[in-house]
Length: 401
Image (cartoon, rainbow, N blue to C red; front, side, top):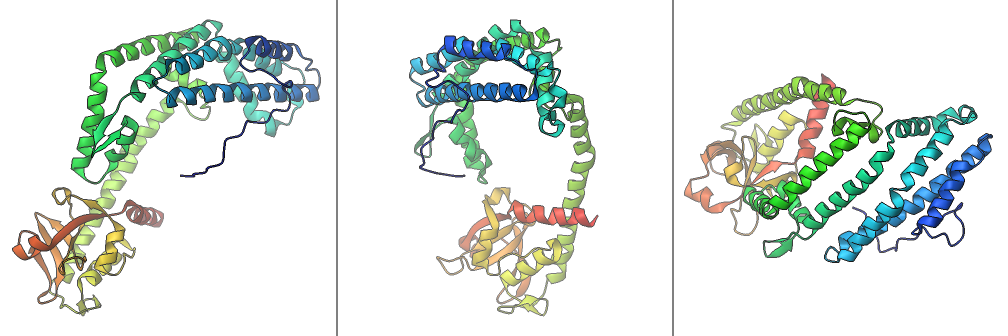
């Protein structure tokens, strides 16, 4: 995340009149009408029209964005929502009809093909697509759609709940849905769902209205459904919805079996490696089968099986894992102990069913139970190797194949 205290400055405009009032429909309309009628008989004139049109779009989009920001920041102030909706309904949306004329004027210009094809090929594609999709009867529907979307944002922006002693919004709670602590994830999820459940009737009606409205927009543009219309409207020229479904199926048929196979190989290799270490004598600072300490064993097993290096000491290996509740620990996760009170000083590999393999200072490498009083009293946490280490291993394996 990039943070700065620098103030946002107004976007500079080159082709708009001095003191141009973008909140005045009369001034915006006059500028659009001038563009729609301008001479485009030369490539220079055509490019100048595009520059003027681009300047106006930047100015209008900037105005709309600021009104949106003020509306969302001041969720309790209905006047801010009204100001946004008014601008969209009375200036931004009505400009669509003029934008259609300008795009069409550009596209039908006899000198368009003389422009640099590398520079303008994508713009040609975008304008052609916009011209095909434009329907004047969709303009009032777009206004309604925007108002419904803002209504949804207004409902959600007023939601909050107390989580771990602090007031949190749904967006702030969503961060905890990826927390390794299952109880924390569940609490955050339930709070979020309860907030939406309290507004269920209102939201259901809003969704139903949006579905009907969006379907009509798609039908007006000669599409059978809104999904295909939106796919086209967003300019996804390189692939179709059908190709996306084919991609999903290929992931299911190829990628998922590959991942399952890799996971099975990892587990099988880890089992074989673990078995080969049983009975190895304890040796402080050691990390091979002539003698090893606890972190040396873990370091060597993971290096031999996965090909990456963990940190060397039990205390530092914690930096390579994310904490997981012991109830959710899986085969191959790590378990940490505070043998000497305040500092982690022992580590082992979890095998499931509360069993773990480790290097005991007295008995060497062996399997013990977390339920043994000695280890139960000194148990600190379970940890799962961070994804970036395992992903690197998967990427390396896929290259080898």
